[in-house]
Image (cartoon, rainbow, N blue to C red; front, top):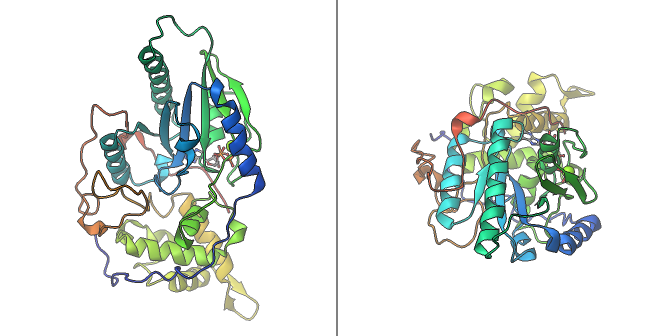
Amino acid sequence: MKNNTPSITSDPFAGMTLTGWYPGHMLKATRQMQEVISLVDLVVELADARAPASSRNPEIRGYFPNKPFLLVANKTDLADPAACRLWGKWFAEQGERAFFLDSRRIANIRGLTELWRRIVLETRAARGATRPLNRPARIMIVGAPNVGKSTLVNHLHNRNQAKVGPKPGVTRHNQWIALDNDVELLDTPGILWPRIRDKKHELLLTLLGIMKEDLILPTLVVEYFCWEIRRLENGAAVKWDTLGLAAPPADGAELLKALASRRGLLRPGGIPDLDRAAIAIIKDFRNARLGRLTFELPPKTANQPELGPPRQNPSTTPAAAGRVPEPNPDSDSNFDSDSNPGPGPEAGL
Ligand SMILES: Nc1nc2c(ncn2[C@@H]2O[C@H](COP(=O)(O)OP(=O)(O)OP(=O)(O)O)[C@@H](O)[C@H]2O)c(=O)[nH]1
Ligand SMILES: [Mg+2]
């Protein structure tokens, strides 16, 4: 559904300098993953379902060229179910195994572990192995920071062995965790990649909590959020009323001022405290109080090489037009809108 704001033609973030955040521990962690890869039967990359392309490391498959690989788009409870279905279909069309997960739902996790088992068995069979694996299957969980790798490991282990937290960089070292059912998981530190596309990409990763947030002003993150929502023409999907707004704001500045005054966030002299307003908005977004929002749709054509925010006019896509294709029964993609309950846990700034 379209909102009534004019269409966005220019990119106000284009000239802005990138933070270039790529700390040394990420490079080290990347090397350590490559060192252990010969021990591993399956690589599972976790991404954020709200940005299934932009939250992926474009280089990661190249690090492990000969290993079976599975993409898991996590946090589907925070993402737009229709967009998840579109992505599931798109990955299936690309021949890429993808699983959409709300890692706090045990039935959903069971489906994922079944798939792991199947992939490991099929890979062995394809290599001509005739005898059963006489050791635990080893699965390495990789991905960007804060996408939920350790949370997933803990849900499977039931003993909260891995440290988790609502900010990037919680896990600092590889950690093997043995499960009861002949599986060993390797939890790894979140890694970014040296080259982020542009400022909008950094802002998106910051909004999702993947990039460290004290590198970018929260007010800029909110300006980006409003701009992106207008660009995607799905402003109507945002629950602006949660913030006390009757209509979508024209831009980030209007939103920040409105929220500061509604919540009485004022500096001395009665000046609206836009920083505190921005932090409150980001927190509400992350808790899905503003709705379940996805920031990118799959590329239009199956052979379009580059992933990323959609280049087509989203109002012409099936999701924007309210037409959502059925999931492909032959695909490994599992997304099912009924499997997604309400908003997620507290994830503050
Ligand atoms: N809503 C929601 N939140 C989740 C889900 N999975 C994880 N989280 C939350 O996401 C935050 C990050 O989780 P972690 O498991 O620490 O993420 P990580 O990928 O291990 O992060 P690093 O160790 O920093 O790389 C925590 O606040 C989790 O509670 C999910 O499926 N849905
Ligand atoms: Mg972790």
